[in-house]
Image 1 (spheres, rainbow, N blue to C red):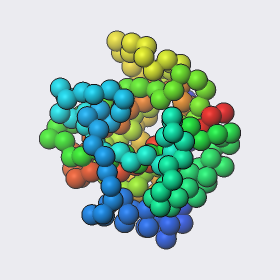
Image 2 (cartoon, helix red, strand yellow; image 1 turned 180 degrees about the horizontal axis):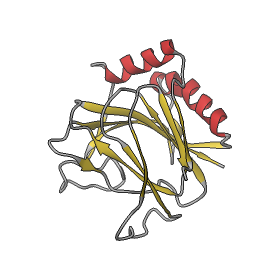
Image 3 (cartoon, one colour; image 1 turned 180 degrees about the vertical axis):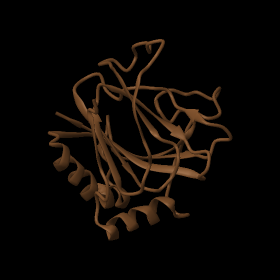
Length: 189
């Protein structure tokens, strides 16, 4: 049984085009992360775990006061309305890079309390998001030896993926496209 929701063509074509051009353009400020799944963990041992991020709303610091964060505010508020979230916990752009082999990042949950996880896909790419049947309320719990895949969601531009924040999930690095760009956000319920 699917416990997640997919909405294609979530934004207007013109707003999506502006987002795509900004995030894939040469002047956007991306910040390197050794571990794209857990930015708080420094990990330089796994060459495929890295990526780039740019925070709009930080878990600890709240809304970032910048032109870029303000540009994305309508998107985040529209997502909040769609999911019925009470508060925005965080929102950031993520970019994973082309990998030389198929690579699934570490399965995880984002927070140890009830929340709604949302992924907005900015570009068409490969590197599916994998949704598992298993749930946990503790991001630091050891993973089960085996996980049951419920769905693999293809990153299609202007697609929104919504799921329960306790659902284990992960992303995959692209092997056919140079990058996979998305906006990851969480909302308190």
